[in-house]
Amino acid sequence: MTELRDAVYVDGVRLPIGRSRPDGYYASTRADDMAVRTIRALLERNPLLDPAHVEDNVWAATTQSGDQGLTIGRTTAILAGLPKSVPGYAVDRMCAGALTTITSAANAIRVGAQDVVIAGGVEHMGHHPLSGPATPGFDPNPRFLSEQLVGASALVMGQTAENLHDLHPEITREIADTYAVQSQERVAKARAEGVFDSHVAPMVVWSGDGWRVVAEDEHPRPGTTLGDLAGLTSPFRPGGRVTAGNSAGLNDGAGCVLLAGREAAAELGLAGRMRLVDYVFVGVEPEMMGWGPVPATERLLARTGLSVGDLDVIEVNEAFAVQCVAFLNHFGLPLDAPHVNPYGGAIALGHPLAMSGARLTHQLAHYLGAHDDARYGMTTLCVGLGMGCSVLWERI
Image (cartoon, rainbow, N blue to C red; front, top):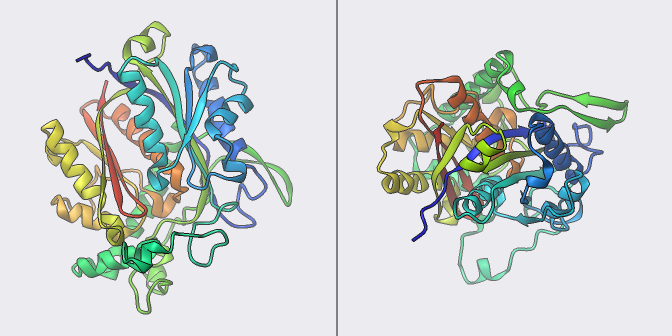
């Protein structure tokens, strides 16, 4: 059997995350142009890389139609000015879109098929609203329900979060709100310390007031208090515990990473910052979608012989506060564990579905680079219709 090569993370870029509404950052901007901006920014940040050395451009989007369709990996390669010799393809694993492009691209490198690959994800939820019963074009196969393959709640992610609250009654609404306030506070602190400046690229967009540059994430609400959140109601269940304040937002964003073989990176003058060790995708009960990170992480740790205590930093996508708290509780970690989402998460920053895995990876790389004593880091997230993903990285 051929020994796997090392696939290393060289760099990553994302756009400021916008709100999916008529006056949001990207209301008048195409999704593919958002992806193109990140590709160009990535190349600008790495001038030693000849674009001709890029051997694939892999992109994810959940709604692959309109400005997110037409094999977006290939179209954005052309639009970004990469040589016509650079191919591209598209994948869809909903919230794990970018983590799927990253692991797929890394695999091509690990087996020796390619040396340099760009992988990313884009989601314009303003142009392509989150699928739900009230959304035009939402058309799940009727057999899901008529043959009782899944419960009705499996098709509404907020209801799956309420189900998780039911399964874990110890996670109260107040605990979920407390976690949400912590996310806002950590994002505000990270922004003040310039953490996001290390991987966020500004973009010129058109708005009702003309052209402008957007450079900061639009979604955070600094200064949010428990009192603010206590007054919110749940749209998913009367008297429910899941609200807009303790859930990720509906957002627009794009982000990508530059991956290379360790030897190829050295030959091209690129500095690998961390190497992909291993990863796991799992399926769980669709009605308990948020539980996915737990078995994914358990299997990943078992395969690598590590324990959760060996992880110096963990980036968990905050689809819902209850999902994150359930993860923390399961692994015996406190609510305010300083190495879990140290820079905050999607409750404050937003969650442009297929893009979020890129953001998690950027923040992980920043943390490992800023902490000389840190070795291992993990990104993990839950995925619609009952899946989970965990990816383990080692600092170089």
